[in-house]
Length: 369
Image (cartoon, rainbow, N blue to C red):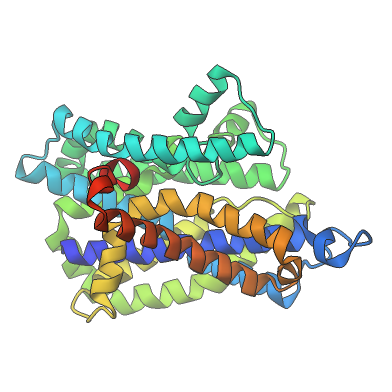
């Protein structure tokens, strides 16, 4: 099962590359349009073009990547707890310590890149930046996963002995947050408390608590879940296939309801159901042979380092293209694919080189975890 979970982690890594590559495709399509269409370019004129829907389809296809990461982390937390169903604080601290040095290393690089663009924080601002991961749109994940490991000792006994009420509570919390956010996107008049819930940032654990909790529950009760999921695997697969286009339609409807041409993507209710269907389908077909099992599993074992390193790499590639080859920005799907491929290849190359060179090999864990 460990190898299978690493494989799921590897698929999630590939999904993150595609998701963030698509994000840079949208930047080229909307924010950098004057670079290749000239001063007369019309902002958001490429909405509803074939390239737009290709990027949106890619984004929707891999929207389950962060849920998958958190699910795997929750599962391994349950595995760590073992039969006792308890996780010690030294175990939590040992895990957190593995996250912090690489996060500091790449966070400093990200802040240095911001400084090169003229973005300077106050000393307190730098502290807040590391506590929230706001030096890039993607580093929120590190404070988020650290929070989950910190609360794991409290969740573990519940996940083992009272998993049904825990799962219900996690569903209700995440559903409340998502519905509040959808109401804000649509511009609805809402009570102050709903607006406060909708303002929960991505790095705050209630926003995605379901996935870690679900991973812990499955980790503690794997046998019974596998039997059930094996019976429903085809229905789950069908549900995932159905929800892919429905998720695209849902987001397009939300954006139109907002009255804005563009809204930064947030996980919706349909996205969550889609993610559950995909993850459970993966377990339902547990006897199926996994293609490229070793390659994808290796990616999964390096997921944390790849996640940290790919962000500055992608930015360098994207901004370099803006200055050196602006004509490529007019072909957003190709540009997004280039950014995604280089964003994956360069971290893997750096890992390989660092592992091959004895003088710096000792620092590998401080850079990539």
